[in-house]
Length: 206
Image (cartoon, rainbow, N blue to C red; front, side, top):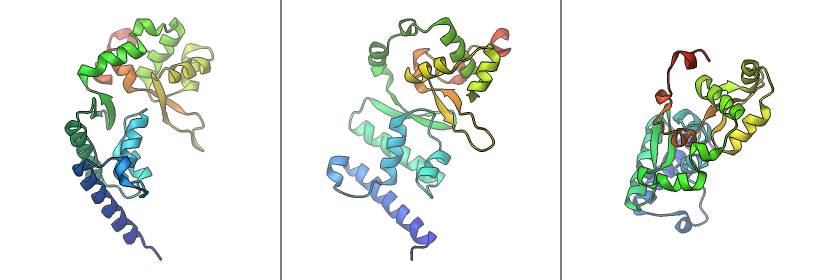
């Protein structure tokens, strides 16, 4: 019978083996039919994007992953990306981390997605985006109440464009999902973090 201690030991062993594999430069193609390592799970979570990945969120997927192991994983992946000349890196954002292109490659993103003007968001979509940005995590019910009209279609449009994402799932007490802005939102509007959002009197009254 496997005990909790055995499971923790196995996690620590697989985690260490994954780190050693990164140091050797092993990739998925050389790993063979092995169970997915905690390191690769964290990498996949970062690749998927959305809200910044926190240690707490990673620990929900990789049971038993400590804060120290999470930080070591991020550092090991970044070291591998630097050594391999990858165009992306893991950066701290808020309380978590995101996988993002290095500054000299961000022109590619602009050519791919276009500038804010080229995104051609309607005035209504910009209004919804602003409300999410300043009130996140914000639910559809909150956005509808503030605007006085139904906002579901606009929220879905912004999700499809990668400007917002679901950051909190509903539960028994709170049925609505909650939305927040994404790394692409920051890049598109030239912001380093949400702290860089304009703070005028009008905006603070949103």
